[in-house]
Length: 79
Figure 1 (tube, rainbow, N blue to C red):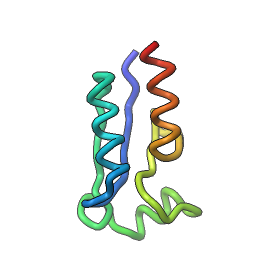
Figure 2 (tube, rainbow, N blue to C red):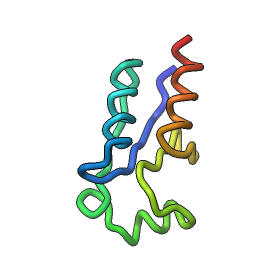
Figure 3 (cartoon, helix red, strand yellow):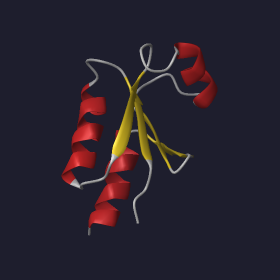
């Protein structure tokens, strides 16, 4: 089963880069959105109303969390 992973991040964010690397390690396709470039800051605030840090990650349209939650999720899937 392929899950739709969306990563919202910013340039220079090391945990954003780690999230992308993790998806690649587990051969999980993902879409990366750079906040302020691919998605406006206002849209990011609507998607994640109580979050002000990146990365913010969604799987199949449901909010997952940040890098730590993605790491835990992919580790479970990868085992």
